[in-house]
Amino acid sequence: MSSAASSSDLTVYRLTRAGTGALAQPQGRISRGFSRLLACIDGQRNLGDLQKEGAAMKLSPADLRVWLRELERQGLIEVASVPVEGDAGFAYQGFVEMQRDDGFDKTVEQIRLALKREQPAADDHLLRTTARLMALESGPTTRAITENGFFALPSRNGDRGASTPDDFLVLIVEDDALQARVAQNIIAKEGYQTSWAEDGHELVTHLKAPRRPDLILMDVELPGSNDGFDYLAKIRRHPAFTDTRVIMLTGRSEREDIARGVMLGANGYVTKPYRAELLRGAIRQTLNLS
Figure 1 (cartoon, rainbow, N blue to C red):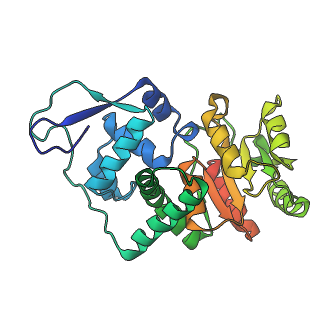
Figure 2: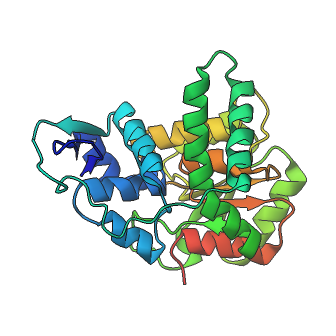
Figure 3: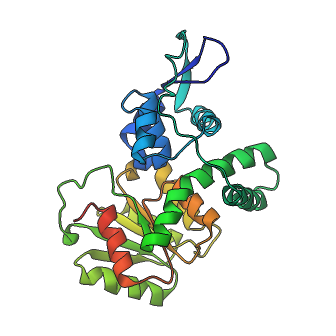
C-alpha cells in the first residue's frame, strides 16, 4: 500500500517486524483503527471495501496520510524500496471521503487544547495531528456510548477456551470503596470471580500475581501521580499483558477523555453513573460471551 503522489512513482509502505507483531496482537499495542490500516497495508484487507462496509473510519486522503505518518513514526511501517508505476500502489477505488463539519473541527480543537494543557512545550502541529487522530478514533466510540450507554470491543485474542463468567477474573481498580463494592456486587451476581485494587500499587501487585486478571475495570481518578490512563498505557506497552482486557469505568465523559482511552487501547468505556445492565453488557461483549 502507498500514499498518493503527483507522479507515477508512489511511495510504498510495508510492515516492519514491530508492525507485524502489533497486527498479530492488536489489543496489546495499537487501537482498532490502526490495526485495520495495518491489515490493509499488509494486503489482508482492502481499505475501500472496509469503508464501504462501515467497519472502518471514513478517512479522507489527507487523514490517511496523517495515519500513515503516525504509523511510520511509531516504527510499525516503513517505506519499501520498490518502485510502483501508475496507480497500482494505492487502492483509491471505493474510497469514501469523510465529511467535515463544524462539529468535527470543534472537537479537534477541544482535544488539541486539552493535550496542550498537558504538554505545554509540545509542538503545536504535532498536537493538531494527534488531536485529529484522537477525534477520528473516538467518533464511533462516542456514538456507541450515546446510543447504548457503553462502548465495548470484543477481544481479538480469543477466550482461551473460557465460555462462562466463572472462568474469568475481573479486577476493579477504584479508590472509592463504595463504588468498588457496587461494581463487585453487580459482577459477582453474574458469576465472575472478582478482586479489588484501591490504587496503582495494588494494581501492580495483582498483575504480578500467579492468577492475573482477565479483565480490568479501570477508574481514571486514582491516588498518586499516575491516573488510570497512565496505567492503561503501561499495560498496553507490556508484552505480558496483551491478553488483558481493560474497560475504563469512570466519570470522565468528555470526548477528549474517551478519545484518549480509545487511542491508548481500551477495550471498552463505561461512564459513571451507570446502570447495572450496561456494565454487564460491556463486560460480556468484551469477553466474547453471548
